[in-house]
Length: 509
Image (cartoon, one colour):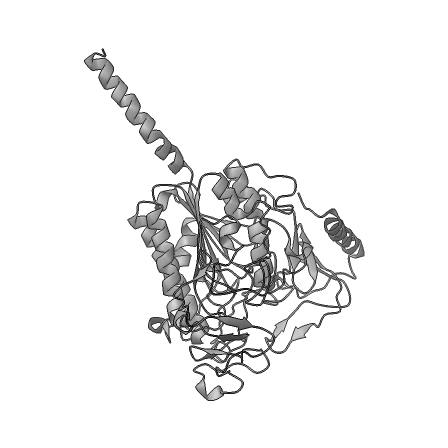
């Protein structure tokens, strides 16, 4: 029999063994990736905005690292999200352009993804918000049954999403592969080729709109919540969301996931729709910014980030949670609706000092706000290290000691030291993707020749296309005003050859 001292020692050891797994698990940081939509380099106070107030994001930037050379891979949303999820440049794969709302899944299910890295490391994983990477294995799908493959088949334990963008049908929430609130007696149908059903459209019934569509943008199909959308939808009347409730619903679902998983390490991909069109803020925020609805939804976005920060504090998780905030591409003012983003601009510069915007090969297309915060682990700083969203797969695989197979994440590089401020050295080379490709090396940027149009009058954005080579020294000319290709033909040849080698190699690492 054990003596009293031996019994006490045995109980102590048993208690330590029981506590140890929990303690070890919590040594791994929780990770929340806050991914917003169409936010520009100049849209935050911490990045120089003076006409709009973003106190919560400015606080996040002040307590973490604010990157001045942080990039999305692409100047539009689906390709950037593909790169983020897979660690592969999207231009390597056909079908990764901006997807319609009924597209099939473009993320491979047989390769390691960003959430897959966390899942292998024992994390609970979730996506809450915009998806826009396709669902199912074909365009034709039954929206009234479980749809797979989708987020749950590529690494997320839990998903609460809308399928594509807020301006595309179907305008429904989906939870773990099923439409939320669906009435079986009112089945959903979706078509992007021809009209279905007898519901009014923005083109036929403009008098029913509470927000008019801009001419020739395509937002004139089925009317949902007084707003014309891209594509046709019938049925699912009770399941349709209203734009004003979407941000609040996503926020609550994100907070619920945090609370439910606070005793284990978790990865949350919180994918906000702001400030993408249609910009229809919750009623509380309407008119608050003085910059039209685009400004209002940026205020709403900032508030939601603040609510996540408060929830982490409330649950005692703030010090062990790494927060990343960034955007899928650069800004656009008129992207299909008359929402006063242009008429009430009031001197605000969404692009900051950069040229171009969403859809553009110029810097404003892909250089976006990039903030990383981890209280107590990351010292506040401003970093000029070049980092890209395509690098998150390899960086977190490095942190969590999850090996990557040769076919996994071919363009993702381990930037963990740069992301946490332990190194000032980021990427040396980055390929940017819009209508054409560009490559940045050591602050020299080459845009390959293209036959695409140079300017889009519908969005009032320079697209960066030109029939001749373009070369810019970003360290001296961040606004890309001086094309130096004629003065430095040797640099043009060097970067053109390097871009060709990266294309042919099929990988960057």
